[in-house]
Length: 76
Image 1 (tube, rainbow, N blue to C red):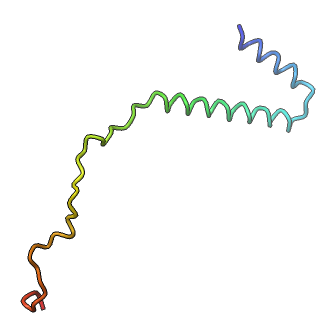
Image 2 (cartoon, rainbow, N blue to C red):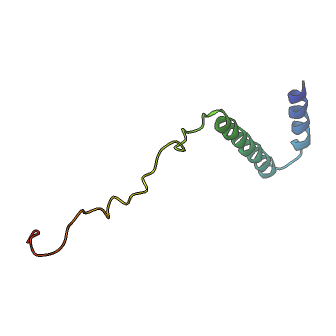
């Protein structure tokens, strides 16, 4: 009952307006509808799995070269 009333009221208020004004209001309403739809979609999506349980290595894997020393026995 509310929606038909608002539609009727809007039509009567915009009846004497110029076309650019009506288009501007229509565009604003379309933007609002798109925003509401995106919010609803975002709220219904499941959250991404968390990596909180993943274990991080505290060791720097690039710094562990063993007993390498540059005495000329390496690759030439």
